[in-house]
Structure formats: structure tokens, C-alpha cells
Image (cartoon, rainbow, N blue to C red):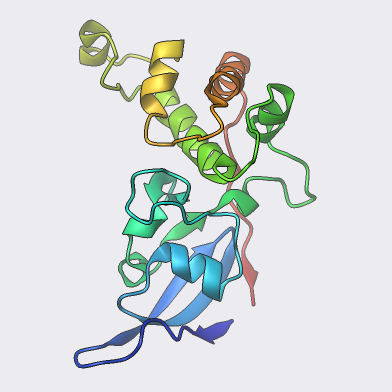
Length: 202
């Protein structure tokens, strides 16, 4: 698939580059203005509107996606810097047949959303939290003794979950349900997100 992003009005010094992104298992060859953010490329060019534009300053987390398996605010990333990267948006969390991931199901089971605007970013961030904890990565509230000897997965207490998800705001205040959903997945040892994506071209 080869598409062209119109981007901001052209002016002195405006440059474009070919960029290849793998998004949810599909390879996209793009011609992008250097000023286009990953969020705008996803929403305006690839029609993946699950990632939301909230503050556009990296402060609300509504635009959170996974970049090479790690969570990131897509509104702060220039798409041209991600050539060859693997991007997962909320649209890529479910199985190819549409079956919800355990985390998505947990969000339903625990009423972890109201209006739903922040939910895609909350889900992608929660996938990152579960992966980070499984790898033993400490957070700001992790016991220093445990952080100094990360022999195994980090325990996701309520305090840990709150700290690790603190970059994702929910104006409806569904935080209790979100924390319960993440805790349920952690306790069940459920796979947090999609496995290796199969190659799709087009």
C-alpha cells in the first residue's frame, strides 16, 4: 500500500521521506511530511481512528499505542523516525477472528470504561504495564529491595497499577474498574496482547 500524506501546508524547508511502518501486522509504505506525527498518520492516513487525539501534548494518554512492544504517546512521535517499526494500536489487540483479548474482556467484565474515549489508550497502556511487570521492571513505588534484585515478575498491587497507569487519564473516573481489570489479568497470568503478527501486505 503506497499512500501520500498531505500533512501541514508546505513551506520553506518542508521535507518528505518514504517511510515503512508495520501496523497491526500490515506493512504500509508511506510518503510523509517530516512534521506528521504517528497519531495523525494512523488516524488521517491509515484510517485507524481507535487511537484518540486528546491533549495533543502527551499529557492525557488517549493516544497511547505500542511501538516495538513498548507503550508510547503517538502524538509526540514523528512518524518518519519510526521507519521499520512495529506499531500496535487498539485495533490490533483482538485476535484475527475478532475474539477479544483477555485484557479487553476484563475491561468489559469489570466495567472499566464509561464514555470510552480514553479506553483505547488505557488498553494499550495496560498491555505495556503487564509486559513490563512480567519482565520485572520496577516502577517509582516498587520496594527498593525488590527493585535491586528483580529475580522475577513485579507484583502488581493496587498501588503499582495506579502508578504504572498514571499517565493515562480517565475523565469519567473509571479508575477502579480499570485497576480491577488489570489486576484480574495479572492474577490469571493472561497474555496481555497479541502474539507475533502474521505478515499482511497491501
